[in-house]
Structure formats: structure tokens, C-alpha cells
Length: 288
Image 1 (tube, rainbow, N blue to C red):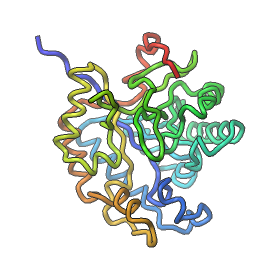
Image 2 (cartoon, rainbow, N blue to C red):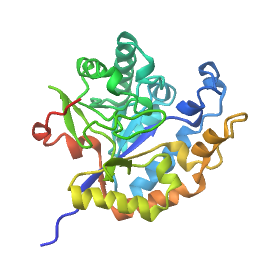
Image 3 (cartoon, rainbow, N blue to C red):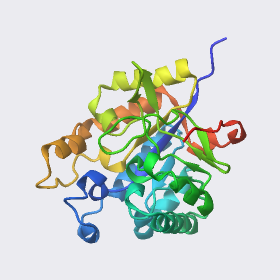
């Protein structure tokens, strides 16, 4: 008998183009409110795309966005999707001490729950900024009442990464799971296979093949992520940024939506909580 297709987790990090960590040196926080905010229209496009495929996803939403666009959060919930936390102000966990991190994740959780009317179970650190140097963050998340995190990226990268961390779901505290975004294993090294800039850079067939490998050979559910600004080729260009940052942020924006539509058709997708929390008691203890 053929194997049933694995349900993978589709996730969207709800932030706007001017809040991206790589652009932080060029856009001070006190300018955020004066920038053209395009997140609402982009999320609405994503919601329509998901509705067309009858697909449900998890939206890791900034408290800063939710505070200004509460109706957007409610539209996400009305569509059957999960609202999770991306923190309040897109501050990297590695840039905060324990007290400030706890305040940030607690504030975001309460705000999102008050607006959505639903428990917020999940958290994703901006720029996957939980790693070997700040594992205390898991204690803060557990105390705040989160049930899972998706904050470690087990790769080598110049801005983040914990390459020796487990590649798949594992328990990091008694009441908290870590659900790393997906990597593929080649040549004794983990390679990104879960979206973001790599999805825009690589040819779509290669991205599809990497996800198929995880489903068929590892027999694991994949976790894919992208941002609303990645389907927005018309977003304002930020002057004065480095060539490296310019390439990373703007490469192939005009192709992302088409690739996402192919991705939705080629795999089975669901919400993080429905994919991973149903049998959470069976998730192994990790080594981090």
C-alpha cells in the first residue's frame, strides 16, 4: 500500500519589510510608525491564497503588528489558522537579558490572546535567535505559558544557527517543545530546506526535492516559513544598504508567490499545533 502523505507545517512570520533584522542598522525603531506599512494587504493576499487551497497555517505575529492591526489578527483566526507569537518588537532573543526577554514574550502573548480570543501556544524568536548562548530563554517561555517554540535553526549561518541541535521536534523543558525549521542532511552537515531567502534564491524544483527527502527518507513532517513582505515586489527600496543585504532581501521577490502556489499544490500542509501537539507526549527529550 502507498504511504499516506505527511502533513507538513506551514508558517508565516508576520512582520513588515522595515522590521527585518538585516535592515535594522538602516531603519531606526523610532521610524517604524512613519514608514508605509504594507503587511495588512500582503497577509490578506496570503489568506486568500490559502483559502483557495483549503490550507491552514500558523501565523507567528509580532505584537507591534497586532496592536496596530487587530482586525488582521481576527481575520487570521476567522480563516481557521493558528495565531502564534513572534515577540512584541522583533528584538532578537540574543540581544536581550532574561528579564527583558520575559517581558517581551509575555506582553506579546497576552496581547495576541486578548485580540484573537484564543490561547497562544507557540513562539518563534526573531531571526531564530535562540542558541547555545541563551538557552535560558526556554525557561522564560515555559514560565510564560508557551507550549512550543520554533526558534532554533540547526545550521551554520552568519547571523544565527545552532548546527549541533536536533533537527526535528524535541522536548527542551518538561512543558515545552522545540520545533526547529527543516533542514536536510548531506555530507555530514545540515542544509536549509525550509523557506526564507533560500526559497527565493534556489530553483523551486530543488526546494521541492529537499522537502520530499525529509518526508520520504526521514519520515518527518517539515516546517516551512516565509514572510508577507516576500510576496511584495513593489515594497519601498531602502537606500544605502550593503550589496549583500540588498541581494538577500530583494532577490526573486517577484517569483515568490508563484513558487508558494506550487508548494501548496505539491505537499500537504497544516498548522503547527495540529501537526505537532497532538502526540506531544511521544516527542523525545533533546540534548540542548
